[in-house]
Image (cartoon, rainbow, N blue to C red; front, side, top):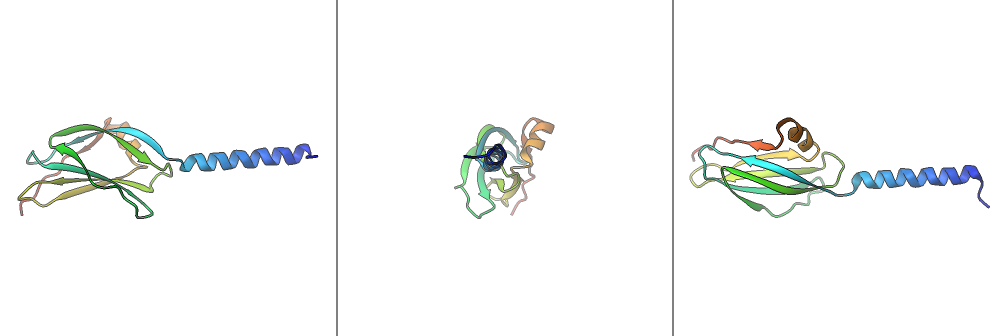
Length: 123
Protein backbone atom coordinates (compact mmCIF):
# COMPACT_ATOMS: atom_id res chain seq x y z
CA UNK A 1 0.00 0.00 0.00
CA UNK A 2 1.41 3.40 -0.99
CA UNK A 3 1.86 6.03 1.66
CA UNK A 4 0.52 9.53 1.33
CA UNK A 5 4.04 10.90 0.90
CA UNK A 6 4.88 8.50 -1.96
CA UNK A 7 1.59 9.34 -3.71
CA UNK A 8 2.37 13.05 -3.52
CA UNK A 9 5.83 12.36 -4.90
CA UNK A 10 4.36 10.40 -7.82
CA UNK A 11 1.82 13.13 -8.55
CA UNK A 12 4.54 15.78 -8.47
CA UNK A 13 6.73 13.73 -10.80
CA UNK A 14 3.81 13.21 -13.20
CA UNK A 15 3.03 16.93 -13.16
CA UNK A 16 6.66 17.87 -13.86
CA UNK A 17 6.80 15.35 -16.71
CA UNK A 18 3.56 16.70 -18.21
CA UNK A 19 4.78 20.30 -18.01
CA UNK A 20 8.15 19.40 -19.51
CA UNK A 21 6.61 17.46 -22.40
CA UNK A 22 4.01 20.16 -22.97
CA UNK A 23 6.71 22.81 -23.30
CA UNK A 24 8.27 20.91 -26.22
CA UNK A 25 5.00 19.93 -27.90
CA UNK A 26 4.51 21.38 -31.36
CA UNK A 27 2.25 24.40 -31.54
CA UNK A 28 0.76 26.13 -34.56
CA UNK A 29 0.25 29.87 -34.79
CA UNK A 30 -1.24 32.00 -37.53
CA UNK A 31 1.35 34.65 -38.36
CA UNK A 32 0.58 37.64 -40.59
CA UNK A 33 3.42 38.53 -42.97
CA UNK A 34 3.89 41.76 -44.92
CA UNK A 35 6.79 41.55 -47.36
CA UNK A 36 7.68 44.43 -49.67
CA UNK A 37 10.73 44.88 -51.90
CA UNK A 38 12.42 47.66 -53.75
CA UNK A 39 11.72 47.20 -56.65
CA UNK A 40 8.36 45.45 -56.32
CA UNK A 41 7.48 42.22 -58.12
CA UNK A 42 9.97 39.86 -56.46
CA UNK A 43 9.04 36.24 -55.71
CA UNK A 44 8.69 35.44 -51.97
CA UNK A 45 9.55 32.01 -50.53
CA UNK A 46 9.47 30.72 -46.95
CA UNK A 47 11.15 27.78 -45.20
CA UNK A 48 11.02 26.44 -41.63
CA UNK A 49 14.41 25.25 -40.31
CA UNK A 50 14.96 23.33 -37.07
CA UNK A 51 17.97 23.26 -34.80
CA UNK A 52 18.47 19.53 -35.52
CA UNK A 53 19.10 20.38 -39.21
CA UNK A 54 15.71 19.30 -40.54
CA UNK A 55 13.89 21.79 -42.73
CA UNK A 56 10.76 22.10 -44.82
CA UNK A 57 10.74 22.63 -48.57
CA UNK A 58 10.69 26.22 -49.77
CA UNK A 59 7.09 27.40 -50.05
CA UNK A 60 6.14 30.03 -52.62
CA UNK A 61 4.05 32.74 -50.93
CA UNK A 62 3.49 35.15 -53.84
CA UNK A 63 5.01 38.30 -55.30
CA UNK A 64 5.78 41.58 -53.56
CA UNK A 65 4.01 43.52 -52.26
CA UNK A 66 2.74 40.54 -50.26
CA UNK A 67 0.38 40.35 -47.32
CA UNK A 68 -0.33 36.78 -46.20
CA UNK A 69 -1.21 34.75 -43.14
CA UNK A 70 0.82 31.57 -42.64
CA UNK A 71 0.44 28.73 -40.16
CA UNK A 72 3.80 28.43 -38.41
CA UNK A 73 4.62 25.26 -36.46
CA UNK A 74 7.11 25.50 -33.64
CA UNK A 75 8.21 22.90 -31.16
CA UNK A 76 7.68 25.31 -28.29
CA UNK A 77 11.24 25.45 -26.99
CA UNK A 78 11.68 29.11 -28.02
CA UNK A 79 14.52 29.52 -30.43
CA UNK A 80 15.04 26.07 -31.89
CA UNK A 81 12.94 26.77 -34.97
CA UNK A 82 13.85 29.45 -37.51
CA UNK A 83 11.54 30.94 -40.13
CA UNK A 84 13.47 31.94 -43.27
CA UNK A 85 12.05 34.22 -45.98
CA UNK A 86 13.78 34.65 -49.34
CA UNK A 87 12.99 37.34 -51.90
CA UNK A 88 14.09 36.62 -55.49
CA UNK A 89 13.92 38.78 -58.61
CA UNK A 90 15.62 38.26 -61.97
CA UNK A 91 18.64 40.54 -62.40
CA UNK A 92 19.00 41.05 -58.62
CA UNK A 93 20.79 39.21 -55.83
CA UNK A 94 18.53 37.07 -53.64
CA UNK A 95 17.77 38.58 -50.24
CA UNK A 96 17.19 36.33 -47.21
CA UNK A 97 16.06 37.09 -43.67
CA UNK A 98 15.38 34.75 -40.77
CA UNK A 99 13.49 35.01 -37.51
CA UNK A 100 13.80 32.61 -34.59
CA UNK A 101 10.40 31.26 -33.67
CA UNK A 102 10.99 32.48 -30.13
CA UNK A 103 11.33 36.09 -31.36
CA UNK A 104 8.26 36.08 -33.62
CA UNK A 105 5.83 36.84 -30.76
CA UNK A 106 7.81 39.99 -29.82
CA UNK A 107 7.68 41.32 -33.40
CA UNK A 108 4.00 40.43 -33.68
CA UNK A 109 3.25 42.26 -30.43
CA UNK A 110 5.28 45.31 -31.49
CA UNK A 111 4.17 45.59 -35.14
CA UNK A 112 1.10 43.35 -35.35
CA UNK A 113 2.79 41.38 -38.16
CA UNK A 114 6.13 40.17 -39.45
CA UNK A 115 7.35 42.96 -41.74
CA UNK A 116 10.32 43.09 -44.12
CA UNK A 117 11.21 45.50 -46.93
CA UNK A 118 14.53 44.46 -48.52
CA UNK A 119 16.27 46.76 -50.99
CA UNK A 120 17.18 44.56 -53.94
CA UNK A 121 20.73 44.90 -55.27
CA UNK A 122 21.31 44.59 -59.02
CA UNK A 123 23.73 41.92 -60.22
